[in-house]
Image: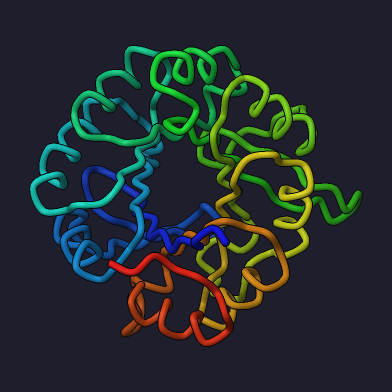
Length: 254
């Protein structure tokens, strides 16, 4: 049985670690380098860094960060936010990143996915999808640009086309649940898992380990990503895995 993964997500604005609520208001929650060092010692399987600077996002900001994080963190690192070209991806992958997270650029020019996959392998490409439920139609709508721009494509089509172009993983994030700590959107995750032929990482809503258990047991998701759960309260990946292992879920032992 494939090992499940626990992945802390670190959101960045102006080189500071922040936590948002429904992609809106945010609060500063610390230094990303210090936080990464703690996660490295706490049995996290990977780290995902997303630059969500609203006004100005560049790969240079991520390059500065990864140089510092690589000195204290010894696990796979995935970086996203402001990546628009193959050159952007190359710079990050050649300077310490293991995977690239592509979101907005995948809507503008889907060939960026295939360009990165052809150059570095599909395992190096994560396509991130931010979505919220339209209460009128009961359909999930997709958003880019940090949740500010509605995209005219269905969830199923975007997942399948991204995989066709070379995405090695799909990272699905519920805008509705982001920062609420009320539990993951299991219906959303089931849909994405149904559409996807590659591993799925789910994010948005973790408030306790029971929420994580429910998703792992009810869906085929490969990994769960968390922000608030680890930012607020005395929780860490070690304790999460100890709890989840009681339900027969397999995790890598470090």
